[in-house]
Image (tube, protein in one colour):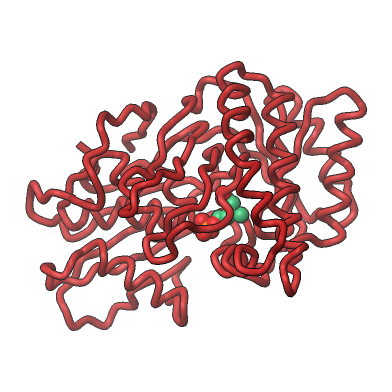
Length: 356
Ligand code: PMV
């Protein structure tokens, strides 16, 4: 497999223009990893184009992988457009994937891309599975369609499937810019620090294996429309982004962790204040957060963040990962603890990479 160790992509060439440089290969397979936001994306400035109301910064996660095979077949076909871990995905999620694939293929293409995805971690449980899935599908689809794009354009295209997928194109610590262009051409991700640059660990305390109650996209729309705290969230984000960039450049774990916890709590506060309120936490979520504070009181640098689900993600130094994981595993209600750390960007498993 060819990894993207280097996030340097050159000048952004506009979006979503792609060029065809060779005949479609018919099938291609790509592997992408989930990511966890340390400064969160929460709210959109354009629903149609899936443009974020705020910038965000994330860590791409080693070992939490989605592998997507996209096959371009002639119409009509019997194949389901989207299969996940061997089962056809129907309903809204299936339709969403089909229209995303059609958009990537473009109207001029009579062939229909179909996606087969295998994820090695719980899907739809607040573990950024959509980031890994849409990043892998976008990459495999472009390759199967014979398209060439630069990495920032790949990120802009993946973003249209799921916002956070824009960040999984790159490894390590990644920023996705809000951008201000109406067409979204400047809302792309880039790498802040390669995955090899900092010995971090990211532990995921799983408190529920089930699907989350509210999809991120529905929750953020509801919160933006009804929460009186949403304006405060928007107002505070630039400071968090600037502070996080500085802390990452300085490899200052305490500062990265402080900003990540505050940003996470502010995001969840907007949800508690929505009408009706949205709660992603369970009692075990709170217990795990408490344990992280106790670990810190014992002198170990560990910091939590939580997305649109009940799992608690904990950032610490790689050397402390074993001890922190054992503390989290002992928390009542924590079912298991996944161990991860900085992971690489999207890779091809089969077929030509679509990036030049
Ligand atoms: O990419 P989406 O539409 O699943 O939204 C992700 C939202 C959060 O996970 C809560 C925050 C983030 O930046 O990943």
